[in-house]
Length: 611
Image (cartoon, rainbow, N blue to C red; front, side, top):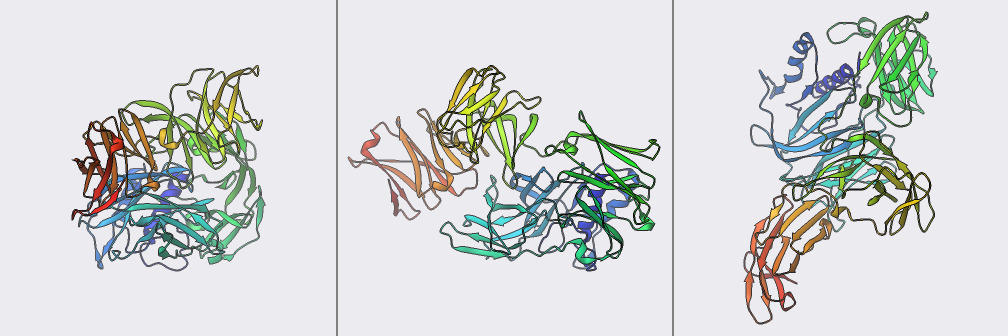
């Protein structure tokens, strides 16, 4: 079975788990979820017509109030923008959004794409009886067997300022909160290693007060729900052993952690959903590729597109179940499904028994498609892409993603062959871009040497100096070790290089306000005035060259310029277009700003702040 069919079977199993099942039905890669069944589950794959005909009744059938549905209800209508976020379980972007169903009820939706080409989307239960809840868990990417990392996610009210996952042993893992433009609720995420056991999720207000807690349901390892049915076999640092679960299943483990499963029940051994035999079942987990192949297979090779051919270790049918086992190692970086590869099996004489071609599987739903190769830097991935600025211009940008966080892209001005620029730090490391002449980088004060990457197909190079953030300066050198540029000082703020989120707000006085990741920027003829979103107090504004422009909390219904001579100028008020709960204001006055106060009033006309 190829990986696409494996994922399809997993999605169907997830669908089946919305019904009452036997406790032994442990193979569930479904997302954990509260409430009734998901009524809009869809699997997006390309399949033979006969197989589609077989699957449609399963995918779209359902129950409501004990009655069989004759057809699916209309898909929910999105409310606000979708959040595109890195899913560490699949090394692909996933989408999370809010929507209203055909009855007008608010629901939480998600779309997941899997390595190998399959994808699925669906919306969960309605937010019924949640009016008193501050936040809740909607699901996670936890699966059996587990991936290396898990992403949990859910919804939160506007008063939630922090989300934390607390492990069984008391470790606290901070999550992230997002407010997609136009969405009525926040979306939260927490990414964590699958080796961590989460005891609860905590949701706190800005003052630290805990507003809600939720305990996830535990997902038991597959081996805990079956009995061993043969001795273990060691291959490439992994152990594989048959279990009765009650069907015969091969469970692969590494360091005591489950990393893969293969069904080997005799009556449907290596048979797809249409009853056709297939030659190989491939699993990829971290830097290992492994699985089972048809009987008689003595050699298995994986050839990456444009790369070397990798050969697996093969064991022929150690338990007499009619399959060969294979296991091999992958390079430390790269994703074979993204690159594309060919899998070939030979018999003992070297004759080709079977061949599977896996074309490059490019991510879907990627708002910042890579230009050239993606570079892995520790936990982060960085790549070049195009970035649209607030004024509509398109610049080159460098994007970065870390598991469980929203991808961010930083725009930069053109870079010559012998020049470079510094961008916002990547953790504790300094990072930037450079022209083709640059081959080396070194920190001036510490003397720390960094690395220069030249991604294939990218317009520029990327330089990184570890543990050299702050105000350090950096020397960029060419192949002869001649200095071609010096860059640095303080790293630029992400507010100055991030693209806007949602539309810009025109304030009617020539000023414009944009919302960017974590930042609000007021653009005037004098330049720009930047404020971090978490620094918003009662009000923030700029007053120069005769233009007042700013924003305040929603309880502010009126803003005035009050001058020392007693004269007043009323500001024009409007709501923000991003759903942040702010009131925007602007006014014009030729009087000096030093002679004026800016005053905010509530709906009753009471003064509530003065600056």
